[in-house]
Image (cartoon, rainbow over all chains, first blue to last red; front, side, top):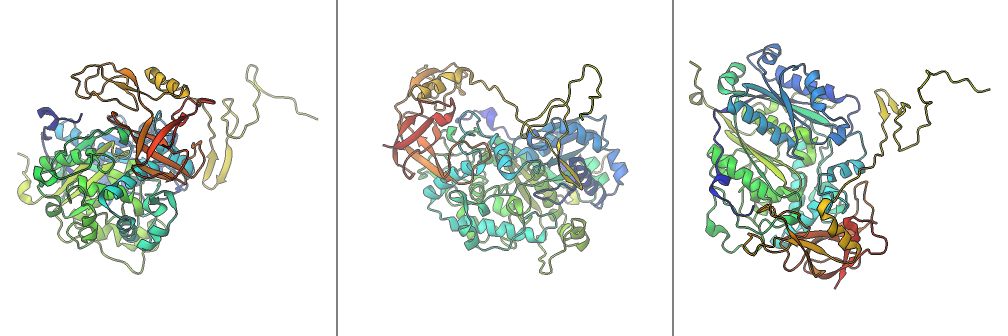
Length: 460
Length: 176
């Protein structure tokens, strides 16, 4: 639809608040043949249940679980349909109910959304959301063909069999419409890969320059290898709970509110429409906007997810109201597009968010301090969960516990770098994560909020 | 001297594994590495995919025609042509009618594929384009068979009518 009626724009209203109480993950690797999928999943869950300073033991927490959500993008990759059942069994949660969620690259975000709905509605009180992707059973070219199976098979997949090309079409148009040069995109590639150097979980930490990105070979112009995210194997897990349960489990649960949006699988089918506004925008902002919207330059799905999430969580200005952000930086171009979709800058001015320094550590809204999908991981089903786990740790002031401990580096067979940087954001209150599929077919936006004692009402 | 076959009656003998073809008779997978043990599971199934009522579009390509669909109702929210075609109007769910589109347009955006995915059948470098056509409410993804792509470049369609693949690859574009 390109015109909305009242019901379409109803803001989500949860029946009760939902909290993230624990998180864990494996490290991420291009090939992880040392471990089978079930091992990776159990190890991510063990970290969540055993290493989050919880007030209950892992055994007690297992006893509080009453539903599970599983997150795997593509049955193709793991070559195992109904992998959810194998994982549920490996985690020992039979015979509790569970289901898997699939929305392409946004599968992680959508799975957490499904878990949030289960808790908010009262269906469940304690829900692990567990995600993984086994992307190493095939080579990179075959993996790209599998991923391109998530383009329209009649009209698109044959044209490249690689998503980079579909984003490159967007990139070419975006750069043309907004008079942006590739060096702006290169800044994002440098930043996120640089932050990945401080993560024991990261697959491809790199100390590179903008020139390296500009000189890197094109996969599909104007996108080079260094403009593109990783293909990873690994797992992530988080635990959601209602307020009463959350405070039994943790002294520091993080409140979660989410919104979701969608748009056509084929970028080319996005008819020109009026720009939906976020709370920090007014109609006159776009009175002189001369391009088609969303065209090939914007993600309406991200705009809609932000609309629902911001209005549900009371966010007015994302740059002011958030203290950190994790975007789905699958490609440098999609990152700059997303800055505009979620209201960090008006449409057409996304470059200012990175050029101003806002997006960097100690900037106004540090973005992808995890290393993101470019530097740390894109094990698709785990990605949206990984983003929320890392963000929860930041809001809890525990970044150092999960990144600076040399033993954690050793666990993954790595040595903590001598030149290390503490990326804990100072006293963060609110954060945002964006999970994204296709060329913007599905997007979820999460608002995470540190609660103070006055938010917490002891159960009667 | 060959060994006599020892097998249960009724069970077929094992056939040799053909590389790239899965054998359904229980022959063993190839070993890739032994610590941890990694095996190869080759697969080559054929999917029989239907175009359903989008078939006229692909038939049209083989006959040198570019066909879209439109909602015949004059007061429909969208009266322009959809290309790629839709069987039903997504705004109203009404059945669409076919409309031949003049096979000329302009390049809306482009990229040149250097490293495609494994199933790619064309040669590289391959200039992909998104085509803007007057009177059409969508864009159409395709490729440029001749010339260097530029945004705004006028182009005309070329159809593979001689040896059609019955895929979207039967349509390409050249400078107009």
